[in-house]
Image (cartoon, rainbow, N blue to C red; front, side):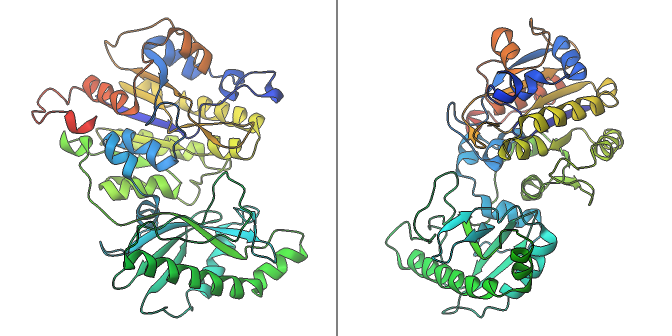
Length: 416
């Protein structure tokens, strides 16, 4: 039997003024997903913690087989490093970085430096990697996608118990800094090294030719680096590996590829598989069709829904959902077991992740059916048989439909 888990990043939303009070999913024409909704169960499922906004990596990890507790503790830095194949050791401290725009007084102006792309950040990181070690601590930065990067801290007596300098959705009125989260010397030493590195970063980026050109072109300069998600590499128990299912992940986003690499899953990614609306949707569908011939479970990821919401563009999000739905018609008819879900909801009105549950579909041969006739937040809320479940439970129901849980003898308490 063939099985596919389709993750549409940031799929859920809230009513949007530009869509006459509908969400992008409610406003979109989705005949393929509506048909699937009528064949099985739907509902609003909780990615991780009810009511609390989660990040992409925390919200995706349960769908990738990690327990709820481990997903809560999962740090972003090691995932981003794994996503780009960065060489890491268990002693390294890893952080997700953003190229950002700072004012003359080092106040944060834009967390994403006008969404600078990796072609430019690659040159910027080359310059930053010339910074010499501070007090024996070597700091390396590598670009990932868009404005994002990975920062690796390597040296003796360092710690991941440090704060973020990336404020996220909160407005920051002071220069971004890293602080130790405990009184131990390792955390203090790491924070000092990173803050000193950031000062040198600003000096180098202030005069870099790329930033001079960006300013001339009326674009925001990428003149600083902010960081979050400090962590160290760990191995995690995973239900997919426990039951002998080796999924193949198709994605174009570094965080998702990083999760797959971290858990030892095979991946397919091409240059045309981006995290933006220009991603090769058809190419992903064709890759999935081919992978289904040999893989027990294919995980297919689409990112741009989340990006559109972050950019406050519900119409673009609606249209992207429609494009994905149209492409899925050539895929789902040949698949036995299907889940469509998301890592979190993202508001197109505020641009932020929300704590709202996500619309989900589950169908497999012989599955129960509920009364949902179209796939949307409102329809799932009213008659969904999956309502109240979390992402781990949704994955377990898929595995049960696949028939792979029958011989699992090691209990499930560690998953809760």
